Length: 331
Image (cartoon, rainbow, N blue to C red):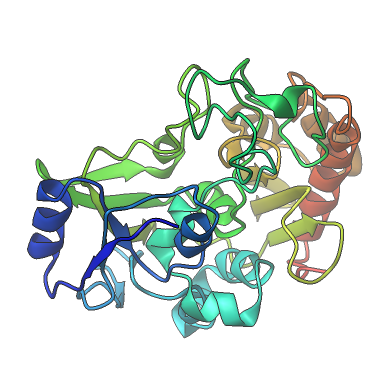
C-alpha cells in the first residue's frame, strides 16, 4: 500500500478544488470498496479527499413528487427511509439484498454507483488486467469466469458490475447529479455506467474531478407491482450471479408499463427497453414472460464456466416478472 495524504473539506467547492489541483487525489465516501482496493494495491491515490462532511446527506421530496437522495446518504438509511419504502420499495429491497448490515451502514449512495468489479483477475496485481492496465489483456476470457458477463462483453473485458442498488435504479430510470470543474450536470442512469468496449478501464461517464452529489428518482409509482430477485451462491453476503429488478403497472388486467433490469450479467446494470416494450398491452402470463426473457438473452454469450448463466437469467426474469404481480419480497 502506498503512502497517501488525507483531507476533509467542508464544502463541495473545496472538495472539487482539491481533487482538481492535487495530482492523484481521489474522493473517499464510506470507503467500503475504495479501502479494499487500496489494501490490495489496486488503487494508489496520493491524497484521499474525504467527502464525509459535505452537505449531501439528505433525502428530499421534490416539488414534482420525485425523491432526491444525497450522495452521502448511507445505503441503510435509504433502504429504511419511510418515503423510499412507501414509494420505491423496489429500491429498498435491492439494497437490503446486498452486502451485510455493517457495510450498508457505511456504504454511501454515490459510492455504490462507483464500486468496481469483483473480478478475480482485477483484484490480483500479479496477473494482467485491461481494467487495471489497459492493453495487458483479459485473462478471465480463457480463465475461471463463472461469475463473469454474458451480455455486452468485448474482446478487452468480460467483468460485471457488482451493485444491487444500481439494478433497481436502472429499472426506476433514476438520474445522477454531479458537479465538476465545468459546473453541475445531470446524467440519465442508463448513460452513467459504460460497457467495456475498447476502454474497460472507464467504468462510468464521469469526467475528471467530477463528484456525484445526488441521485434523483422520478415520480412514478411501481409500488404495487415490483420484485427484486437475486440468485447467488449463498444467501448471505454474496454478489449476484444473476439479479432482476422488475416493475409493472396493470390496467384492466393488462400490462400498461414495464421496467426490467438485470445485474450480474454485464459491465453495467442491463436494462432492455425493447423487452419492456414487448410486455406492453399483454396479459401477464408465463408464456409472455418466457417470450420476453428469451428476447433479453438473444445476444448472450457464455464462456467456458458461465454458460449456465444464460438459462439462469431466463428463468430469473420469468420468476421476477411473476413475482412482480404480487410484489413478492426478496427471497
